Length: 328
Ligand SMILES: C[S@@+](CC[C@H](N)C(=O)[O-])C[C@H]1O[C@@H](n2cnc3c(N)ncnc32)[C@H](O)[C@@H]1O
Image (cartoon, helix red, strand yellow):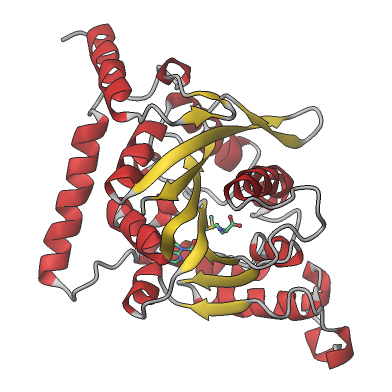
């Protein structure tokens, strides 16, 4: 089979795995919009099968719940945990992306839960969990939008920074002088966030559930994406919402998210991302579907180097976000 035949057969396969109900940023999902340069090395089915095989082998040899922990990845985050709230530091891309991903979350969750998107606190009454919350860049605005937020991360240092920042709303430099803060400086909107150093699978074992489960830029760092999605699904109430964002395993992502971001612009420490750990939109859709989450909407994030802003787009060839609903 030559290269072109492989791409064509991968696309035919993609059509068969994307649910008809899935639409892309308010448009019907068309797999022709995904990056044709996605590697033809293995089909989505083959990749998922490999991920599931790995997960089941591991679960046979360890405890009842398969661990999502990838120690090497966690060590990378632990090493830079102090810089979560440094807007010009290694998490600069997440700071810049935050308004754009929050716009997607606000619009999809408000529609899903019949909430008013123009309200100042549209998520009032909703219980949300931010899985892999890092320093709390997403948990805090979600709490300000009225949600009851739980933020969990596998790195203890991240959770400590997140807790401190949520209580005192400090910028990076004032975090260094935190002992000068008093209780009067506490931020009541975010001080209520429940932060825990734990994993999604442990919370599943504890029987916790949430109206909506969010895991943004985490799945590319976990040990078993398919098992991880099963845990996200188990944490979501029937008919609840699941939101996952990640990076596409495409050549464009290799060029921009790794070569440009890590080596040329040096936004991120070198080695932050492993290209082979990325999932294509088709693969993510399929593993979520197998975990009983139907992907309903997808959008891409596109960086404009002139304005320095990220925009929501139909282009899912690099960064993308998916919103799905848990089957009843
Ligand atoms: C790229 S950061 C994203 C942080 C946050 N979600 C955001 O978008 O602002 C990935 C985070 O996931 C955490 N993480 C990685 N694997 C995890 C796992 N198996 N369970 C919980 N957290 C995990 C890391 O410690 C890190 O804080």
